[in-house]
Image 1 (cartoon, rainbow, N blue to C red):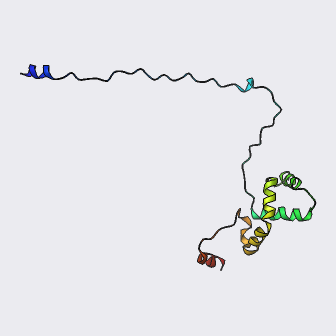
Image 2 (image 1 turned 60 degrees about the vertical axis):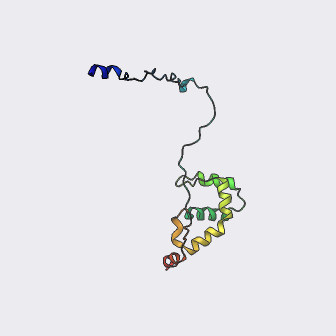
Image 3 (image 1 turned 90 degrees about the vertical axis):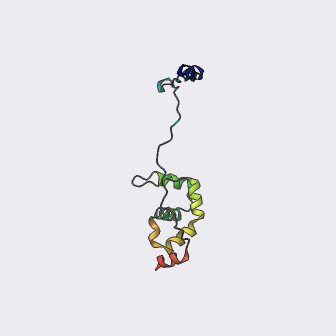
Length: 133
């Protein structure tokens, strides 16, 4: 009877074996020595840093002393300082000159904010009241 049971049971099916995946051959990278010569300058790798309110007040005082100086020259002057260069663009200077009254009012209201990079926004008025005392 055992023989009968085993003979009537179906064969155990196995999965068909698949071909191993074929990866495309790696692409060869060009060597730097094969590149053509060019006179183009690579951009300087510098980290972006926002200026503090104190830095902008220094820029404002320079602008007041040199009224007829173009904004591009002011940007170049502060970018070329040997001791502590302030790096910003002419577009940024134009926007900051437009916001000058707000920034000066904020500094007058909060004298300790000179080292901050942007104004602090307080959502709850009772917190602002306690913080100003």
